[in-house]
Length: 171
Length: 157
Image (cartoon, rainbow over all chains, first blue to last red; front, side, top):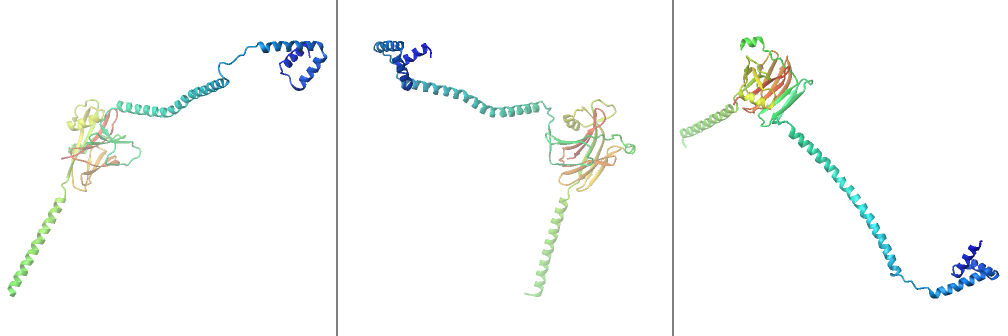
């Protein structure tokens, strides 16, 4: 142990910071060592002087007040973190509803735009009609006009429009 | 009661019964005659629809032209053939409209008709529907480039 460390130990002993075996060992050394004994005496004297001269320092607030302030600050921080976290979750909840609704709205908009851009042929699909197709290779489209006065069967088929010579003669 | 009076009463009874029977027969028979509906008259027009004017061909009536032009893109409609058929209930009549095409029209009663279209001897399509007077059934298809054929079937009022 060097000299500086020993002096610090003596100082600690004077301040009452050393206890037990360590304090006893140091006291034994002080009794045998003149230098240490002088140092201990000087430090004890200085401590005696300081003890009387030291101004009492009182805290402006009680310790409880400080703890309550600390706990309030902690609570405030927790509240702030919760408040910051809450909008994120509510935004997610909102998005969960808003996104499908926005999708449906877009779909409706697209469909309505398509309807408005479609030419108005004034036709209806389906009615109390029976249609029988004999040749499956032919594509057929059937519809009624809006006023239901004309039903149309459109065949993907070209018929020969030439008139029979006998019919021509008969006509 | 005398026997002569008894004979007279029974004779009167017999005559009244006979009269009632005759009246009943007349009523039922008359009703049966009324139930037999008049035959329907169906007109079939073979029409060519084109975008270009074709000289020498007869244009269709305004009624048919307006109806077709309202739906189809062609502006000129020419009547190639027309047939008129009178069909009684449950009967079927055939009309040849071109060298290879003919239609069979059946009167299916209660205003319903059935139309079958044949081409080169094969039935292409059969359509059954209620056809009111003034309404029409149209069988149609494309014919070559930028033209179409129409068979317009209507019932007279």
